[in-house]
Length: 275
Ligand SMILES: [Ca+2]
Image (cartoon, rainbow, N blue to C red; front, side, top):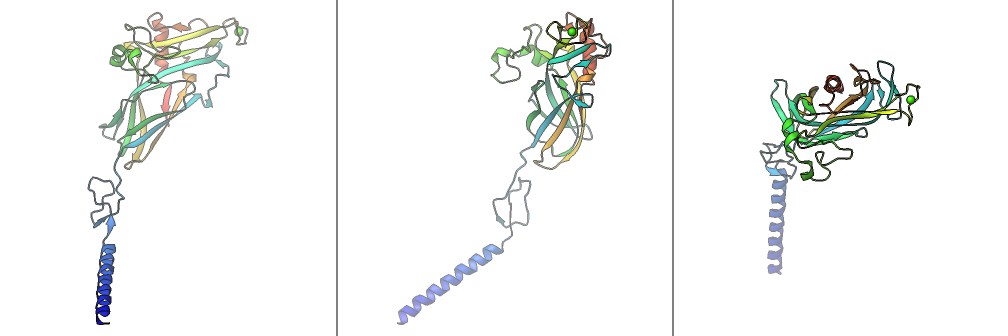
């Protein structure tokens, strides 16, 4: 009987010790105890597994194809400043060399991700770029830098990469490199006010050293760690037919018609905007 009592007392003491230990443990302030985490809590005495890390800001660019203030459509018939009717069938171009700057024009981040934008492109997934802080501007090249254009062999690029062989082609030859901007369509060549199979096509292909267009867009967004950055990129196709007469000047592969290539390049300065 006495032995039983002792056993019970031992059990009782053990239970008390355990309860006391659990109570003390749960009194410890819980939180993230890793100083490298963005939510590091220096008061925490017990790590609760809540640590999160700065993995970069997911950057997504929404692409809006516009004609002035309306959505651009390949079904629509447009009129150039000289009164010639036309339709778009193709507009493929590269956007590359993205750089993000803060208010002091220090570079915050960049990405080598490049895109081949087409008429059907609605968004660009730039992946994660570390942009915590105030993002003032985003730079991007419409086209490719000359190093990429002249040193990359498209046949060596993995399928699906923007620089891999494309249909229709975005590459001329090893000497001429990539096409940066390809604009094609049909214009009312017989001037009967109807666009149909009896009309001719226009094709304007820009490439080579001087035809990359540098863009700088205002972003003005302050991001916390890991916060997404969504950018609205507007493409205004109504800007493309200024400075030449589509009815009489409608084909260039850059070197074979430099005046038209230059006119189109000047228009590209107003083609892209961010809001
Ligand atoms: Ca016609």
